[in-house]
Length: 120
Ligand code: SF4
Image (cartoon, rainbow, N blue to C red):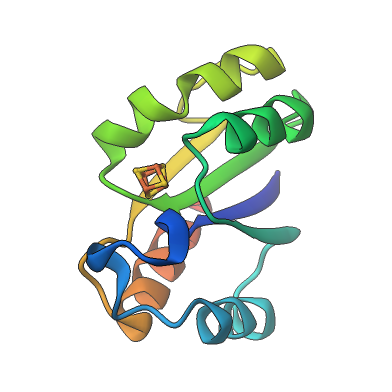
């Protein structure tokens, strides 16, 4: 199973993510957590993010762990990107993680926990 991590920074200006230092978070993830690749996008649920998902996502056994807003919201907001990529959104392809209202350490721990759950 390939693990791809997509961090959404919610424009880098959303008050709900003001306690997250994305540069520090990304480097800690790169150094400390097992994943195949990681990227940060400023607004996954808008047209540019959707286009990226449509182009990036593959049906090749990769699970896409998206760290962003509430999982229920992500299901709605990111569905079109998955649809356009032709990737069904299910527990084998999509693992949403909620990092809003967390600081950098807490967001890191949420992502770490989600990655560990994939191995169970
Ligand atoms: S997907 Fe969620 S976290 Fe990302 S920009 Fe949209 S509302 Fe914000």
